[in-house]
Image 1: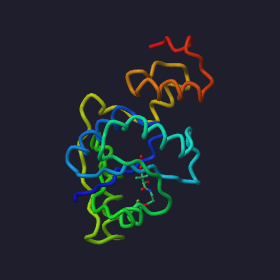
Image 2: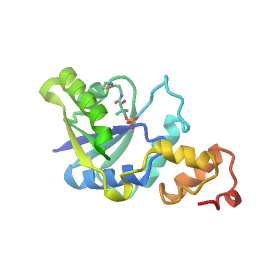
Image 3: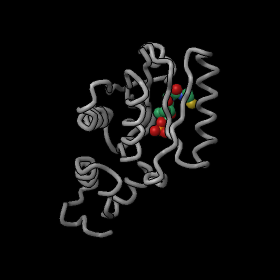
Image 4: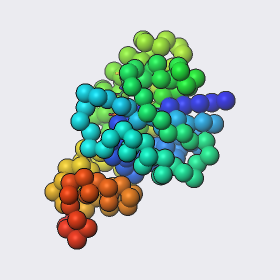
Length: 168
Ligand code: PNS
């Protein structure tokens, strides 16, 4: 059984992440979407909120499970019996960080865990969770970046009412 982990912060999940999830779920028998529970970071959404949002958005997939993890990603991979880490590459600017992470994970886990990259769909190549948060925080329109439920919850976090979400 081919099992992979798609890890990330998902704060919040974007259409770019969801595209990688859909494509990975077609390749692997089981896909674990895993949210990093990093106490050192100050995310907009709690880890439980992010897990619940992802569960809701991946409800239709029978081969996707949503979890959270703390500590090293490779430990979580080994615990889950997943030998592949999926990461999305948007542009060459992602490459250096992703390469460093992949090499570090390979050093830590040896041949037990490999990283596989999917190139982000061009429609989402510019998109990041940070951009979504910045635009939302100023009341800008994020409806083209994230699903409606995520947009609503993100605006709520910034105390922005629906009627204020008209700026493009
Ligand atoms: O969505 P992100 O923030 O780009 O995801 C990064 C993430 C969560 C995959 C990465 O930071 C991670 O797995 N951290 C856990 C700690 C770890 O394993 N570090 C060693 C590899 S650099």
